[in-house]
Each structure stands twice: as structure tokens, then as C-alpha cells.
Length: 93
Image 1: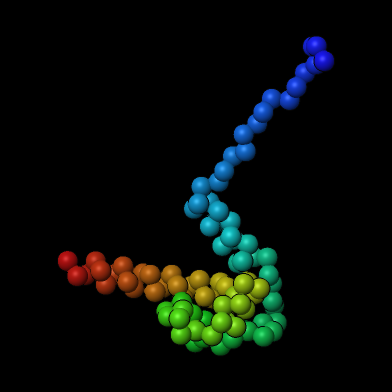
Image 2: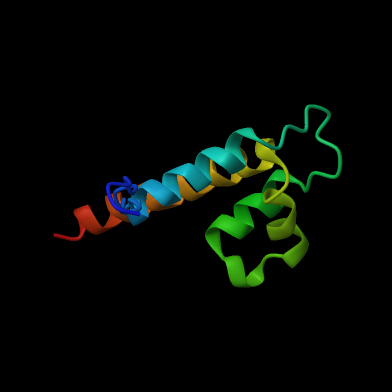
């Protein structure tokens, strides 16, 4: 139609990969409360998942995707492992 207005084409913004990862981390850390810690694996199983994922039980990996407290514990173990590896590599100079 002559004179009809059309919507301008808008480009969808894509999020950078790091932003997507941060959103995912926040989602798993907050959106699956389990205050009674029902069905949670032992802390040493979460640590094993962080330290050597190939030796960990698949059920532990599945659990942290639906339990925010365990995901946060696992994340803490993973961060500690990364800090230790960085400290070791810094000391190898």
C-alpha cells in the first residue's frame, strides 16, 4: 500500500560466549533450590567430578544440573583446582 509504514528490520543481538556461560552458571547456581539436600552425593563425589570428571559417576553430573547447592559446591571445588593449577604453573618459572 502506498504510504504504509513498515517496521524497520531489527537485528537480533547475539550474546558473547562468556556472557552465555555466566548466565548458565547463574541459572544452575540459583534456580534449583534443594534446602533439604535430598538425593545429594557426598562432597568427595563432587570433588572427584571437579578433579577428574572421567572417573566420576554420571549420576553426580546429572545431579548438579538439578541441584543448586551441589552445583555451587562443585563450582567451588573446580575453582580451587584451577587456582592450585595456576599457582603451580606460576611456581614453575
